[in-house]
Amino acid sequence: MKIKLIGNTSGLLAGVNYLSEDLNFTIANDGYPILVVNRPGPIEIKVSNGQGGIFFEKKIHFYRALGLWLEYFKKGKEFHVVEHPQFETSGVMIDASRNAVLTTDGLKMLLRKMAVMGLNLAMLYTEDTYEVPEYPYFGYMRGRYSEKEIETCDDYADKLGIEMVPCIQTLAHLREALKWNYSNEFRDTEDILLVGEPKTYEFLRNIIKAATKPYRTNRIHIGMDEAHQLGLGNYLKKNGYHNRFEIMNQHLKEVVQITKELGLKPMIWSDMYFRLGSKSGDYYDKDATIPEEIIKEIPDVQMVYWDYYHTEEDHYERMLTMHKLLVDEPVFAGGLWTWNGIAPNYGKAFRTTEAALKINKKLGIKEVFATIWGDNGAETPIQTALLGMQLYAEHTYHQEVSLEHLSERFEFCTDCPLEHFLLLNKFDETPGVMKDNLFESNPSKFLLWQDILIGLYDKNIEGFPMGQHYKKLIQPLHDAQKNSRGMNLLFHFYEELARVLSVKAELGIELKTAYDKADQEAVHTCLGKLAFLKQNVEKLRLAHKKLWFSTNKPFGWEVLDIRYGGLLTRICTAEERIQEWLHDPSTKVEELEEARLFYDGIYNFGEEGTLGRNLYHRIVTVGVFSD
Image (cartoon, rainbow, N blue to C red; front, side, top):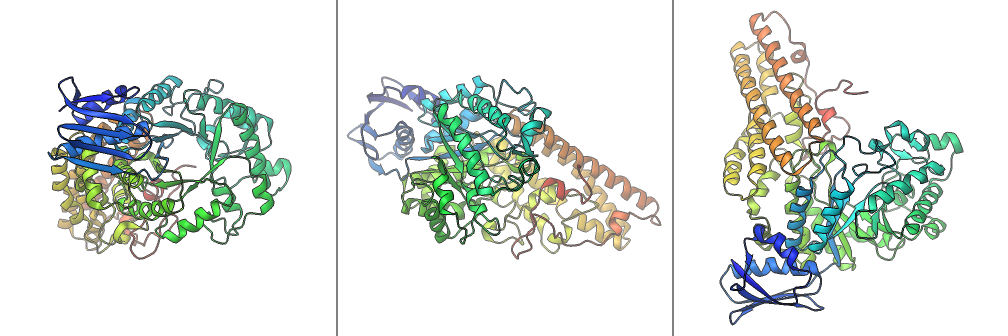
């Protein structure tokens, strides 16, 4: 449609042009007139007597309001809608450190979606995926961003009313950065910096300068979470044992001094203070105590309370209240559960988000954001985060959010029905898994990658109709692919995944049963299914590859290529081993001779309502994968 913006549109037109194609409108002198008024107060949109109106305070409010206006105008009636922002800042943290590094076009796509939703904070989490001139090995072959790439995206975000903030690490989570020999003199453990070492602070000054240079904001997230072995590596050898609260404060003071000299305002993840105050090292320990003298020594930083796990409102209220003893205005970070495996866990994302944001509103927290992690290879596509982002956005402008309201807004903002995205939740919320998958079961991941002959998770799924479950997803996903503008690559990938899992999920059980009975006919049937899998796993790989390259840099894809290659090769080996047995049943297939045990290992919860969860290297073998 054509629209004509009347009034003070200074600073808005560039962003309007960015959104015009996505929202299917053009600016024209003969367009429908919309009065634009920038003033303090809530978002207000209306149409009456042949003229529209958009009233807003912040730039991000205008872009949300523009989308709302277009959505309501399509209904063909006069309207008057008011929204009251619940938070000053609301947005996302995008993980660019787990192999998937978004291209500038991929980032711009996400920024446009954020603007229409009304999210105004985009943190780019880069452990080592940005250029630091002094250290050529920092982010080497990892798809690191150039200064120009980040500057381009920061300019783009600013035009849309979005603040981009660098999110780095300055203590732990630096395994990829510290694996090179340049770091020998300032490495405590394989992923933690050596506190107190002058070369550590020379390194940090250089990476902080490089990380912040392309951004217009003076804010920076300096990390400092999950430093579990702090002071227990080379630090211990060099200095002996020291109180770890004191080590943490000593290091934080040094880093904050660097940020102060560079004119920056830092924030950190808060967990290390709570872990050190807990006898069990648990971040969420209700009995954790941080000594008053330690609290007094904490430098002036924002504290980010991250929590992706709890569904109880009283838990969030207790934790936020404890955070307020440390800092006046804590920031909250939730999670969109894009890191569960190869599919999103919307059940857990929704349950935790609803509980957390309700309490954040109650306690007057001003800043919230949602993390989009990509653990264990970033197998889950970034587009799956859009639904969780929409949930955050609607909570940012409403006290309560109904599923009907969320559905309407999501379909407008993404041009894709909400029910299509909810199909993706069924990849892990399968038979045998509790409603909302609160124990984070990831059967679509372990059933895809597990070995046909070894079947480490076969016992876990025994008796559940997994193949039939995935078979029922194929047609709905095919239909979604045909009816989702701009999301066809996403749904094509998941359609191919469902097709593969419909056969592979229970094939190991079928093969083992047939072999134990020496049923040659049944084993031969399994052989035919392996031929089907070879063909369709390759189709899945190609669909995944096309989707990956539509938003991500090529670096990191090699890991998934290797995973698919390993899967295909092991299918070939299974074929060969079975053919040998069919030719001579007196031989043994030793892998099939072994009794199947329930997988009872690390990352695999044994509670009722889950089939298990694990990382790739623990799914494919119990052998030494890499050491």
